[in-house]
Image (cartoon, rainbow, N blue to C red; front, side, top):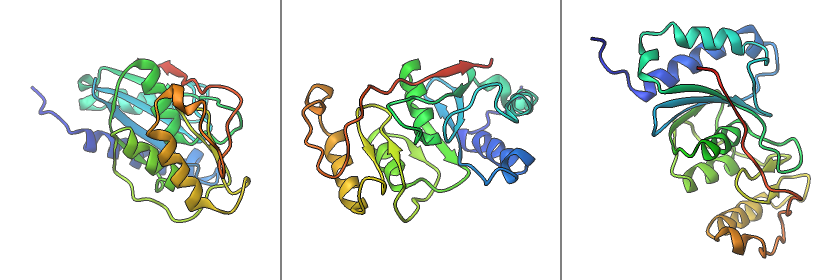
Length: 200
């Protein structure tokens, strides 16, 4: 019987494989995210989401399924864009939104790059153990995966103020979020909705 492999080891294997691939190194290194839920499912995405038709994802699925720890997983999913207006769907948030639709909690997550401050704030709020550091600096755009909120330097230069608004927004119930006063952030026009594709 094979010994149990930790979430960290499984996630690290996938991240290391992605970083070595031409689709990663030749495409301005978009940030990929790999996570495992409390139900033992692995969810993978990147900025703007992925599907089985995304370059390199078929090969990634094969790589995962040939690992001895594959039988530990309860499923493999690719997370697509979650909408919420705009194209600023960060990989971490695509994974979180997909997990929400699946009805499961993300336990551990690692990305190929550091978490932006907005993603780090959201992952902490969601109780996710991030294996990354938090990057410094603003994002041009960021969309909330659970509510109608957009942030980014395209709105204004007060990034720290926007992060503070994000934290305040997250403390409210969904009904109260609808009446949130967006001073530095912006209310998006539609609710985000996670999307996922079951690979196995």
